[in-house]
Length: 319
Image (tube, rainbow, N blue to C red; front, side, top):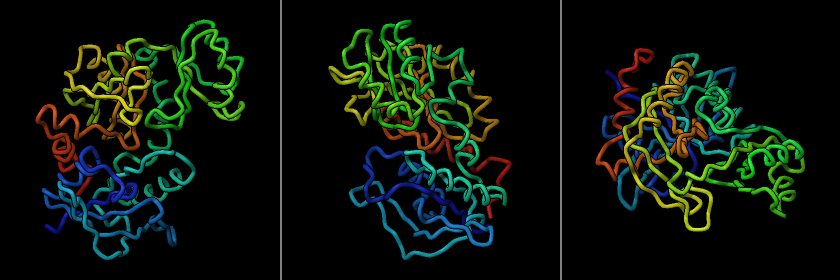
């Protein structure tokens, strides 16, 4: 058998935080299994005569202070790779969408894209929750200030956030009567020019915004609760939250059972959902994190579970 070929599209590897980076955890596992790693960034992708290619660097990784080594740049036809991990962080903009079309051509010719290119386009990380209303808190999608005001009058205490953010960016809590209400709405909706999500505020956020990782629709047994720092409503680690690992609750598992079949049907192989209290708030499909934190707290290897699944999928044949 020839060497197994893994591509990864990600942000600049020299800028990651290796001790907590989930993409690095995946690459370390792949390397330990003998995969050749083809590292590329989103602007390395291109198409010529309807065939998708990329400039890439052969990559080796290690779990120490010097966590990567890049060899000289070369070019590869993407469908000559066995698997490509699409791990580019948001923003989810037009350039991201264009990249999914380039990846989709390789996918059509037999390369497994994780996650499936068309599903990356279709499944906005906040809007995708609409498929599972039984799991979600009351919510509203709108760009109109008057509808947000009506929603706030009904629920008294709400969260307002853009549909394309990450890491807690531009998430606001507004209570009925807050004198800053109008300026917050104007800011988040960009004066009525951007669709925005409002959700009823969930006081259970004080116990943590739980990240649950699923592989092919099946959950890892532990969640990472991201606890807001004092005076903060956001549990995101990027917003200064602390973390606490914990076993999944019965409700957590019920939510996973509700969404798992749809994830599998859409080719969403590696997904991170966010749960506050008993409610699903987001389904993260682009570049879910928290592998390394859960691995460290519970002495597990989530990336090994992922690659066990990838290497045994019937829809790929290793070149």
